[in-house]
Image (tube, rainbow, N blue to C red; front, top):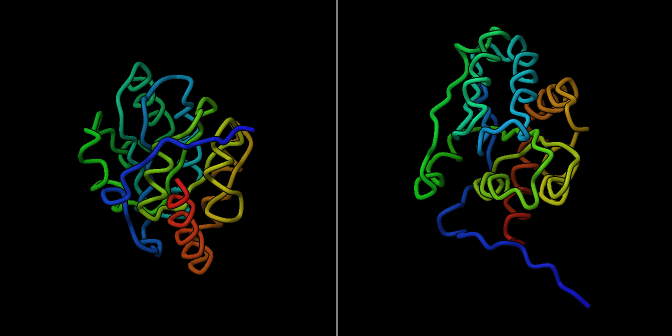
Length: 184
């Protein structure tokens, strides 16, 4: 018999409360900005959502070899003015960052645990991610967020729009993110 033990988290630091979505919403992605993390999928989804949520923003926090490419892609998609690329943020201050956002987006197909997703959840954020590796264990489809197929920016945008357009669903998902994070 085996028992899988999740990496622990400091829930005294990473904590939140049940949220309601702001208008306009603030989208967040945190992680190493490398090509295998597929941040361009998040950018493409954001470009589709921006007409529905004028004034929305997307912050992509992190640094890495794909950062310059992501900035170019944001310009190409016409969303650069609505995106922020603050670079690396020290882990010691990340717990202050997550609660300022409404929805966590990730298109990474390489997460063996997804600690940034777990941190976002512990701060009350619903999430939209892809069906790969550990993400469906954390982002439980139709419980605290939605799972879409990898590289499907259209489905990611539709699910994020659905979630942000239904305040009751959003608050339920926020509550469930907090509950799932407690299990870790």
